[in-house]
Length: 311
Image (cartoon, rainbow, N blue to C red; front, side, top):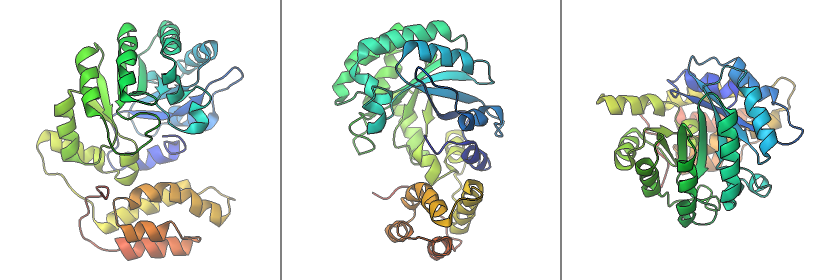
């Protein structure tokens, strides 16, 4: 997750169990690009003890090949191409999800990268730019190239993160491709994750926003799959998690208002699993003291909380 899956966030989430594999933020690739140091830090200073995959975004083949070769000099488990970012500032440059409008260009990029990458090469995609029907043209391209893993976010680019996730298209990819498929898109609980794996035949799950809201989710899913009791956090444990996030995200010398705004990036997701009142109030705070007052009012208790998103 861009501007989220930093070294700092990886450090925090790993204390709550963490995923089996981490993906970096994406390296922006173009003719004069260099590897961003703060993203490279999540590889070279990886504190989690788990593998990390280096993610790239771009459309210029020579630059993507150059960057992939550079990244292979570092301890990465795989090189990943992002075909899923739905941010307008990205897709308008024909990168991320914007490339889904040009299947022939994707074909050429995958061919060049597969030749250049000697370690596992993976791809993350959405099911289309405007319509899920576009997946009909995309899937044969993914099948053509010997990629090692495909992650399918089962929404279109224009859909952003709105409802209507097409899990049936993940199931189709899992049936038709030789490589493993990961399911992505609105994974929010251990029981739902188990059902999603069973229904799609996916080999695993990629979890993004749900991990911000509930860092316990990875361990909860593992417990569910083992047939064990799924443990829920208390309000105070969630409060402690927010304190950890806050402490890790503080940047010396940055003014308080900027720090509060930075934390709202995380609190918008966490609040979605707390209450409407909490989300309403936390979005309007302007000081650190007000932030903690709102958090204490909603989370200063020992009741168990599922952190499942509000409908």
